[in-house]
Image 1 (tube, helix red, strand yellow):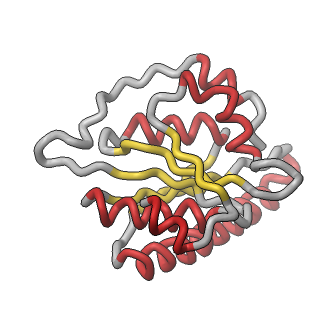
Image 2 (cartoon, rainbow, N blue to C red):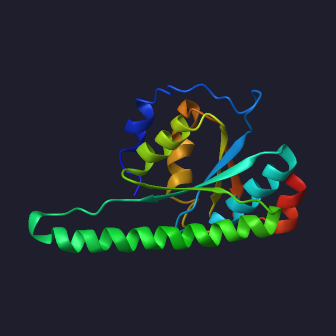
Length: 177
């Protein structure tokens, strides 16, 4: 899923200055809502942080394009529409969770393309995004694809990255955020 992401980070050149703490702006957390079980921990932390910081939350769902050939374009269009519907449903669940936690209405962004390129583009386009919040899988299979990738590239990432353990309870996250 996150192949070639190191190349995307290697060429990272943020064109927009972070404005999150300037007058007229407010800091925002960016959360990637994916198909991992631990996305809820990232949403929970970001929502609690938004309350305390007086900030907001941006939820991003990335839809990777399917490989398509000429004879299957009609099928690809149907698959794209289904992927968009699934993305909307995932963001609906995540936004409902954030609203229940912090009575906030997060911004919702759906992007299609290479995941790391889209993640970096969203950060570049919104100068109020102050931090990326991810949750790590506590299981033996590893922390998850995005967390694993960013662990190797966090030194070149354009904003701070906060990684929450997927094993933390709501009460534990409350005490940290």
